Image 1 (cartoon, rainbow, N blue to C red):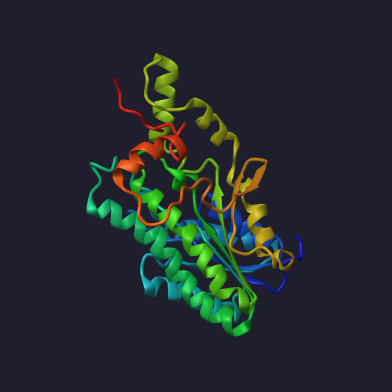
Image 2 (cartoon, one colour; image 1 turned 90 degrees about the vertical axis):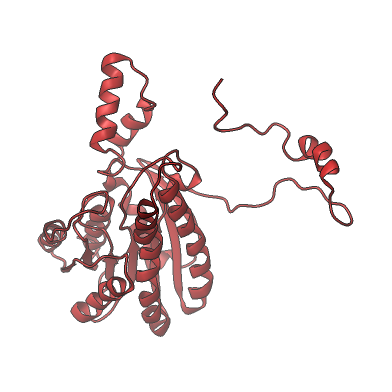
Amino acid sequence: MGKRLADKVAVVTGSGRGIGRAEALALAAEGAKVVVNDLGSASDGSGASHSPADEVVAEIKKLGSDAVANYDSVATPEGGENIIKTAIDKFGRLDILVNNAGILRDRMVFNMSEEEWELVIKVHLYGTFHCTKPACVIFRQQKSGRIINTSSIAGLGNMGQANYSAAKEGIVGFTRTVARDMGKYGVTCNAIRPNAGTRMTLSPELKAAWEKQKATGAATGIDGSIVEMLEKATPDMIAPLVVYLATDEAANVNGYTFFVGGGVIGIYSEPQVTTQIEKPGVWTLDELLDIMPKKITAGQVNPAPPKP
């Protein structure tokens, strides 16, 4: 076991399985004490079980570090506060917060129910806030802390995931602002867009569709190269970056978003205006109809063109 995070205390939400589990174990392997939070629900948010969190706690103790389970839902303010309170009650401090908990309720936007929209937003976006706010009260007082939020490449646009995409891209904006709110107190806040095979990304439905496509040649819309890549990119490959961002050595890294998957780690550029037009006063529609195709939208390609 390493000692880079000795005497540190971490909270990892949704750490009973997948990426969160790998993150909790990696933090513990560097000496951190860990609050293993997991409601124990299915990937769609239904049901609950103590077993996933309890099993990870047992694994961490085998590593020689310490851990405690927490089964609260991040979707409520009370749940978020109790998750953070668990760290203080058990270990007397908090140094690291990894917001990882998530669920899926995929549906094309024209079929998506209010419940499917709201539940995904509540767990991902609200859940990130519900844990970050009480953590920041502590971090501000002690003038130190590390926050690592979990976004997704789905936030850049992914068919059938309007709720998930909106929540995940909202987390990026939230990360930028928390970094600015908390930076003067010695706190950093960064986000990752992880790419790994988990029960959410490699669902039984996806695997079945891919096997059917291979066996019959029927078009199912599944990109086989993505499935094969996810099968090779394990959650363990995500964790080292999260541990790095939690260290004192990453004190200058604040407000950024990273891609991580397999052996690839990258940092995203911040959005900026690449081309613009200017004139005194207000543009008229006639002027825009003439100039936009020439100066701004020339060469732009519709990512989802109408079918013939």
